[in-house]
Length: 279
Image (cartoon, rainbow, N blue to C red; front, side, top):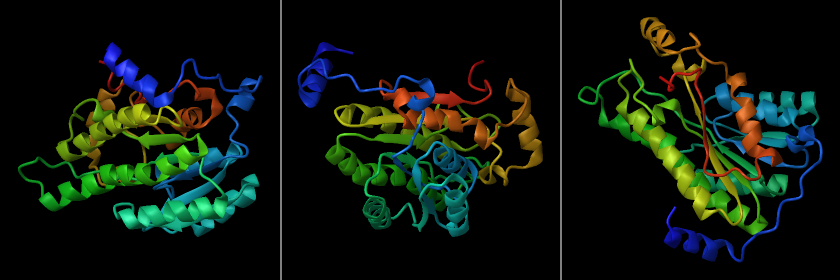
C-alpha cells in the first residue's frame, strides 16, 4: 500500500495508534454473541438459516429476512429453543425503500444492529451469455449485488452512529474463478463484485466497523436444486474433497467474522470450498 493511501486512511480514522479493544480472556467467550443483535438477509432457508441458527446458539438476538418462504414459525422455534429474541421480516431485497424500512424497523424493535449479514442471492441456470436473457441478467445483479449496496448504505449509518459493527457479505468461489462446468457469467460477475465491495467498504468504514466476505463453494442448498444431476457429478469430480459442502460447514466462518474473535480482521474473504479453487 502506497504512502499516499496510508496517509488518507490516517486522516479518516484519526490519530494513531488507536486504542486496543477490550477482549475476553477465554477464547470461547471471544466467540460469544450474547448481548448482540444480528440480522441476515435471505435467512429462511439454506446458508442464511444455518447462520441465523448459529448466531442464536451463540446468544445473539436475531432478525430473519424472507421473501417467498415465510419464516414466522422458524423465528418462533429458534426463539423458544435458544432463549433469544428472534423475529422475521418480509422484504424484497432488490427494492431500496423496502431494504431501508426493514433495517430501520429492526433497529427500532431490537434497539440496535451489531451484525449484518448480506446473504440473500439467487443462482442462474447454466446458460451461455449468447443464449441468456437480459431479464435474468438484470435480476441476478439486482438481488446479488444491489441489495448488498442498499443494505450497506443504510446499516452503515447505524454502525457509524454506534461506533461499531460487523458487515458480512456472502460471496462465492465463483467470484474467484470460472465455475467449470457451468456457464454462468452473470452470476460469476455478481459474486466478484461482492468481494470488491467488501474490500472497499472495509477501508471506508475502518474507523467504526469491520467488513468481510465469505466465499462458499458448491453447497447443498435450495439454490442448487435446479442444476442437472449430470452437471453436479462433473463438479463433484472437480472438488478435491469429492462432495458438496453443507450449510453448517460455513457457520464457523460467519461466527468468527461476527464475533470479537475477529476484531483485527477486516477486508478479508474466506474461501470455504472443499479445495475447489486450490488447483
